[in-house]
Length: 122
Image (tube, rainbow, N blue to C red; front, side, top):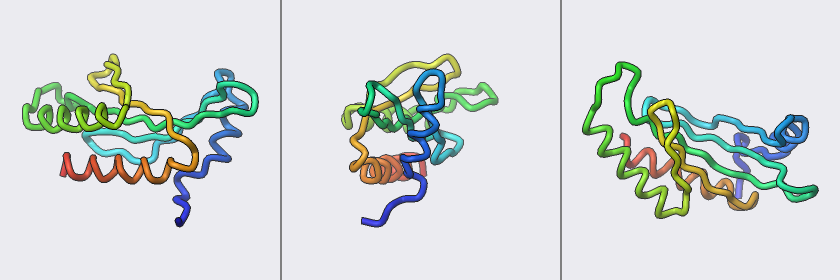
């Protein structure tokens, strides 16, 4: 399988090692409805973990609720939950979905999530 240059984990691991909190994050994709990113955590020596995080924006910056967008967001969140993403409410009118993924499965999960986002929001 061809390697996705956005998913280069070595640089992310180095950044996590240099970080005070042992974590690094890189935004891979962003649109008005969501943001997708890849992160690395140093959980114990020699055993880093990788995660994919998706932020689903519930309300646009104008502050007006768009029920169509909220319905799409709910559909996306249900699909993420079915894929074993943990869902957490954030302070900035969004919901974070996160899952830990083995390094060898990152590309496949990233493609699946991108496909989901495109099918729901476009």
